[in-house]
Image (cartoon, rainbow, N blue to C red; front, top):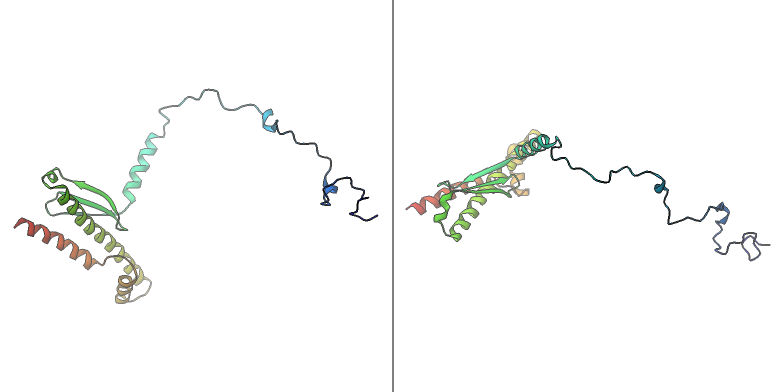
Length: 177
């Protein structure tokens, strides 16, 4: 008699040799669940409490979160368009004065675009300064750090941010004449 032959002492036909580990477990009844024996713990009708005492906490955290995000703002000389930008240069908010109604749609769009560009350059210049200072604190020479950040990182230099602000001022002084 061979161990895996047709006259094998195991009567199973699957031939995988693992039937010795099958300790005659009963067939699984898929219709019943062991959880059916547990009582239901959820009430049939759920009452929603409008005043859950978390309102004060929710409003406090949202105000704190808003205060912790650093932003930079640029305003055009007439004070009609103010753009707030995150430090990565993306626009966070655009505030318009009611006097912008005197501008055409194209003029307003162009003004928002220019002021947003100034805000983005000012914001990324803040990051530029921070990275240069961090490298200097780590022991790098100031000129090397400034050149490294200016060459290898997409942040505007403080000089570029200043030039953008001067261009915005010049733009409005030209329009006044």
